[in-house]
Amino acid sequence: MSRPKKAGLDYFPLDVIFDDEVLLIDAKFGCAGLCVLIKLWQIIYANNYYIKWGERELLVYKTRINADINFINDVINECLKWGIFNESLYNKYGILTSKGIQKRFIEATQRRTEVEFIKEYLLIKDVEKLYPRKSKNGEFMVNVNIIGINDSNNEINDDSSTQSKVKESRVEKSKVKESRVEKSKVNRKYKKLFVEDSIEFQLSKKLLDYILINNPNYKMPNLQNWAKHIDYMIRLDKRTPEQINDIIVFSQEDSFWKSNVLSTEKLRERFDQLWIKKKNGKPKSTFEILQAEYEKEVDNEQNRNHQITGSN
Image 1 (cartoon, rainbow, N blue to C red):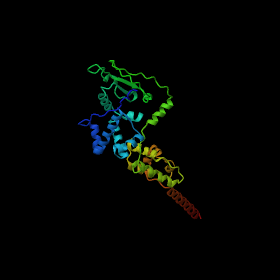
Image 2: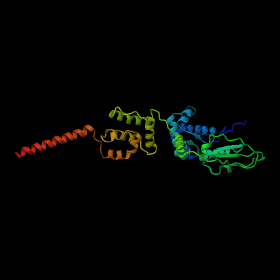
Image 3: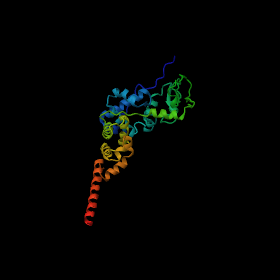
Image 4: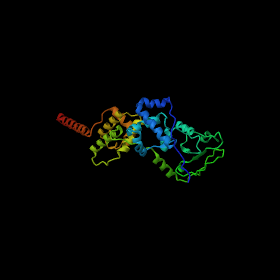
């Protein structure tokens, strides 16, 4: 029985002077943020040149990283923003990696007999050309296996050899239906967790409280999913928590919008319309509308009586 192939590294190089992007993490989060980033690098290199990152991994590694879940999320989001981790691969496959990580991994595995890469995860072209054909004494080579993402869990035969060439394995395309491929991509997407004292969760809870006042029989939603849309508004749409809070209050005090904004997803979708209407004036409550209609009817009745009296 052959020995299992080693995938990760026992150590990795850490620059004496950090790149500007890493300094931005330090500037925003301090030493605690920098510590989270370094521990993430440790986890990635221990795995190989990437790691899948989602709800499960966040819970598994939370103790090892020794930081609050939301703080870890904030650091990761900032790292994605500044390119410390590749945002495209993160959004598409739910993995944390970067060109720099892959470059250092390649440099650290120059003396292995075999390395394996997943084609879709690679950010470096012609990776097999970066490995030596021979060692100095001519006694080993590096077998570079580049496989497809659907074959990443398959066993690869241990075919260590002393031949002086680098070869790339050709993997037959998997005959998977498009719907299954799309489903697997969705399943790989990162799921962010929101603790109850997070601003995203609190704003979601506030909208729900308003809705339950108007309709006590409203079906209880998944507040984690609601918080996700609040996160999108803050992180992607650049809305401030204060703006979102104001629009929640506005929408639920408006006689029309309170029956049409029944989720954070709908709140996000209608945010601009609500913002414009709020800017034009405070909405009237149902009581104020009925009161205004009553007063108008009373005025009309008085005018009619006055006209009848005058004609007599």
